[in-house]
Length: 33
Image 1 (cartoon, rainbow, N blue to C red):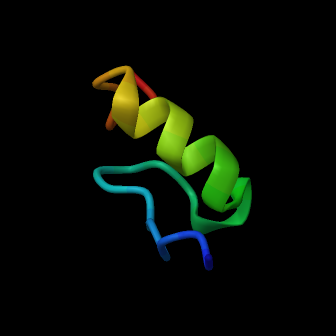
Image 2 (image 1 turned 135 degrees about the vertical axis):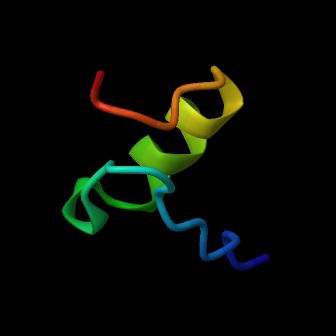
């Protein structure tokens, strides 16, 4: 099963990768601030 292509939102950089983006999104984090 392929992992969903989750892109960071807000001002999070795309370079952090899908795994980090999913973890941050799950924690409700969508900004560097």
